Image 1 (cartoon, rainbow, N blue to C red):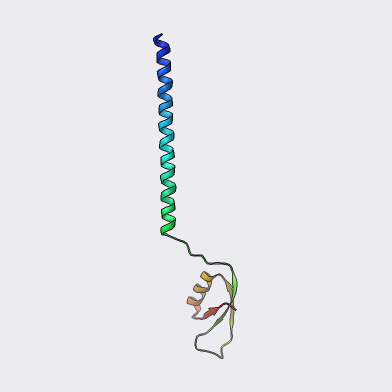
Image 2: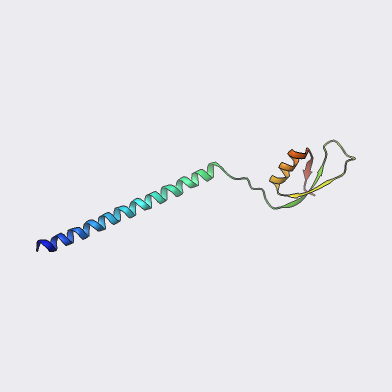
Length: 90
């Protein structure tokens, strides 16, 4: 009779340990997802939009030719900084 009682107790203990481990893993997963969401929200990536054509001109030079450029808004900003031209969407 004592042996049978010990088997029941050890089965209950292993289920309790399994439940505790499962709960700990669920909490860890929830906390990591929550932390990841906070990190993404605090460091948003810019929305550069689609690739489109741009007409670029030299500032204060109405007689200068247009310089075509194709790229996203982010690429246009980098192009303007590198060249000193001002670009607009046609």
